[in-house]
Amino acid sequence: MFFAVVIALSAGLQLSGKADVLGLVFPLPEVDAAYQRGFRSDAMAKVNRIRVPLGVEAVRGDESIQGMLNRLVEEHPSPEDVDLDFVFERVQREFPGAQYLAANLVTAPSRESLLTNLTQWTASANSDFNTINTAVFTSGRRYGALAVMSRRIPRFTLREANERGGKFFNECPHCQETHALELERESRTLILSCPYCDLPFDVLALDTRGMVRRASDFFENFELIEPGKLRKSASPEERILAMWQRVADRCDYQLDHHRSSKREVWKMPSETWNEKAGDCEDTSLLLADALISAGFEARVAIGWNGNIGQHAWVVVRVDDRQYIIETTLQDEISQDNLAPVAEASSFYQPEQLFDRGHLYYTTSDEEEFAQDYFSPELWESIPVPSESIEYSLR
Ligand SMILES: [Zn+2]
Image 1 (spheres, rainbow, N blue to C red):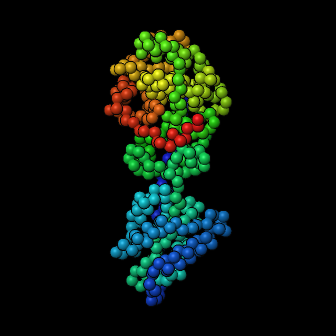
Image 2: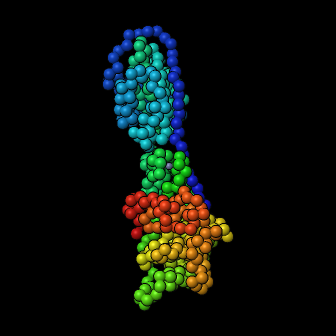
Image 3: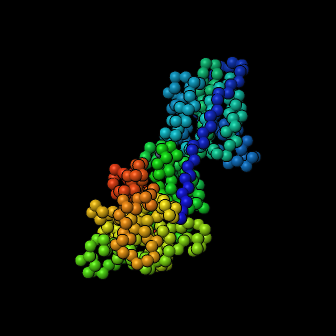
């Protein structure tokens, strides 16, 4: 039914060792703030003289990173021994968007040869970077410079991903590690997992307008008006069956690619209702939304079905009873179709669940989690980020 694609880029780090040039000994002037500014400005000009003729974006300074480098060099007892891994860690901790980084430590007998060394650095012509910052120090009779080239990418938001695309950084809600991510417009349902802890942290899908949304944002408080007497006198199971029957009667089962292109899209519940057709996740969303509006506790499950493969279905809880609802059924719906989760667990293997406010994932044993879709011990929840509220298309 749909494909899961995980896209996560690990940070593009480049380490350069120390380069050194032996030479004559000159008396060294004091390296003050004006000297630092002048040196960086000269380094930038030299580097851009290489980049611009190659058609590579010119570099500029990044004042915040520059300030950090100055402090780092000032505080270090012997800056010529600074560990570049330590520099990376510090830059990325303070600037999580600095996912593209190169650092270099050079020493030379003169300011001129220091600048020359920097321009011979392979990173200087690399289009991954768009800033350069340098912190000069003196070491004995020699000059040294700690140089960092970087490109900062913005924090991931769906709004920005939809508006501009490109690469973003994101903090994993589970392990708090920062990773880079990029959404491919051509991709279908996206289950985003952290490259460090492997846990899923978001489920995204394309809507019918080609916008990427979070799974939970497809809910829209859709209501199926129930006849008053049903609402008052029927059992919860009878009410669930009546709503399910209405969805089954109205909506034909229709695979996406019969509809338009090959791209997998999810419909809003009102779209499925109005178009009278949908595939498994469309009708699952519609029925789950209607059940929640009617006061039931319901979730959409995405996962694996033994007969179908990748699939989506609804799970609903009534007191301590949980049922699987197969919304692709087109027949007369009876009590027999309302399968208790334990009985259906060999056919229905959920991987992620979601409702209006949360995404749920599990790290438990599959013998257990398919028997209980609502247990907080088996299913951990991630709240949907608040940007979703303002992101609503309605
Ligand atoms: Zn993680």
